[in-house]
Image (tube, rainbow, N blue to C red; front, top):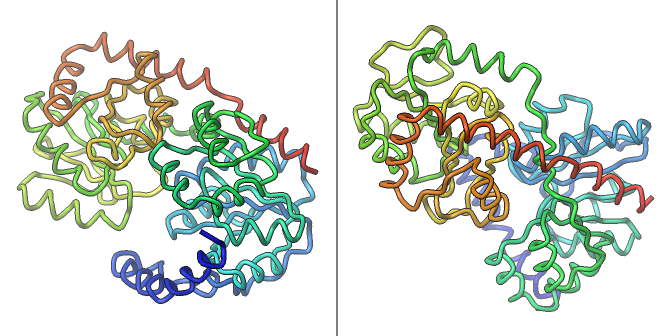
Length: 418
């Protein structure tokens, strides 16, 4: 596909993109804010200090920037840092992490004029695209300006690689124009190289460097006191659409006495949807946002409808299941659970984190379940066997600590570009 055809298709899709923003705003009103930024029009003052720019699509990528941003501030104290996002939840996560210490905005749609306005306004000295954000007009615009553009914390599943391969020369030329690629694993590097990427280094996963907040354990203990210190607590973290029902089916078969299930949906716009599911099933439940006193004994489910508390939820549970993996959705990040020393269960669909998931299973930090029946069996078995849970918890902590260091390796690549 020539780039001009790609660009033409993007222009044709603009009306549908606006309709999609309005549709998503029905659940999350923030999608209607800052719409001009999505076309490269910014009302913030133009930065006067030299600028380092990172693009992080949503919440997971934004949180993964934290260890790298800390090192960049230390190494380049006179530079400003800009983080761009695609979703309101990513932008909110950036505000929660950094307050006003970094600049924030939306990265525009990949239209030539919009990208030109973005680069003219911010004038970054270097750009870092987190994970697999390949916008071909942006890449071409950076090359014309001789702006070093790096793909960092890069991951590429086999499924995504097949998709990019269908773009042929468009993907190949885009990858070749990147100055450097910092891949998470050898497999990611091999797939990226096959598609045309050059100057690839394997630096590991930045998410292993994300340290829990200093008060995470204290906050977790406070939350656990509200749950009930004597009750077993099972956490279903980052669940996706359709999974909550499956998790509840699995829980219903476990027969674990007094079990409390905490469900934290991946996307905040689904909180009300999951609450409606709990109502429909007649399950006594409480929202986290309404939890200020110890739970009554008859409450079976807590709906985690708060933002920025994931480490707290992990600290407060005995066993965690990582969502996005029971259904073919690719899985979610299990690193935070391991960092908090919690035994982890994952489903069969983890291609977004395949190497990490397989490594965690091999290390004894996680167990993989094939379906909801196996999920229920593992929950029952592990709550009956405290020794097995403790062993998995120890292995999770060890697994997390053994994979640190990606941020410093990425910083070295950045220093080589300057």
